Length: 585
Image 1 (cartoon, rainbow, N blue to C red):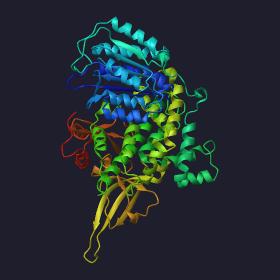
Image 2: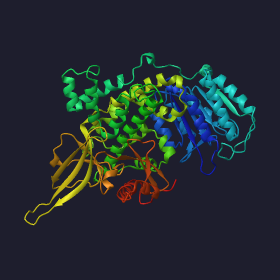
Image 3: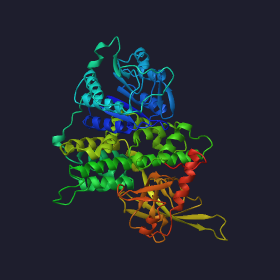
């Protein structure tokens, strides 16, 4: 699918007040076409040179349009990490064989046009003078509004110029104030390549993926995909499949087995989608509507969270080995993730972050507990179909508030198709089970030489609330009061596990008298300054706790203050980011 890449970069010293408005406006303008799958639009809100290089490499063969918005000059772009030579960006853009247009929405970028033409770019929009910040935002909004309605880029350009000329400039400029800048007459220009005089006739892609929304039956595709994907890794589902069970004739039994097969946090989200709503209910998760659409997005987000935390736990384990340490780019990516506030967390690009985490691992790393992560790059991250599905769900996640009621059937259909595509590559999760180590007792007696440790495990089978109590006694000790991942089929005496703490925590491990009838699993959510916030997996949108908020402990009548989770988080942060404490946002 064709891709538009929009990069926005601001300056801490000379902030552009309307750049965030431009970012939001273009996302809003393009989202309906993205949701109709005419193309993919990916916006980088705080673009660095590494960000642009990464996405230009990732999208190389499918990139149709590139825009940069921010401070600029004749031969430079000001990215979030400093000035970037325009010639380098031009060279990278020249490696994108299907690129049709480059838009440089900053001051005096006319000097970059020749270098872009030399790289074969068919059309460039650039400026020949200092441009007001408000004017640049207005130009960009009108340009994309015109293209979104079906106009050619040349037609949309003329309308955008007219809109700017009808308004007054404001004082902030998108320039670097480099020596030699001149305040020439004329603002934006449209510059077709000499060999591509017709380049101005280019339009936004309008190829739509064929769908059958009129015949859409909620859960049909999702249930079939889950059954097919997890049967090879789950004994009960494998047995049902061998006996000829089908989702039409044995739906209840298959759903029950699936909910046990999936890791508890993901199972809880899938359960809401698959379980029938009450008879006569006006709305339900299994019916076309906003409840279902929101829940499918939530299921995707929790699943991606689970994958992210598994990868971060592997990073921590690998960092303890002598043969591998995270490189500077990985350290920076993880540090940025751990410092995201609530708003920034909502805009997290899961697919790209997961790809960066996985790409940083050594090939065939021998110490990976989740051995299937070796194949994650090939099976998940390098498939165009999966990439498109993730980008669609990421876009939908950001635009749920603006969904038109008339589009609900179509969007539910496409969201289920995308979610099924993602789950189709995650069948290996059925080989693992989540458990909480509630307590460890030490068995050391005078008449016995060896010391043994007895672990009280709560193994969470599927949906939250289904658990099996187990005692494990052996010479090696596991991580106490932690949420761990166990591999089904491993002998207890092998004592193999992956600790997901402090990214995932069970509130019960901090209770004097725990409620063992239900797992109170929380995922790390975001930071507010130096304070850690976690979200309850059962209700991640409404139940968010701040581990440093005294009101939380009064409301919940907690005796402990989750200090263990906070200490573990700080140790991991220092391991990745260095000895400095996280800066307040």
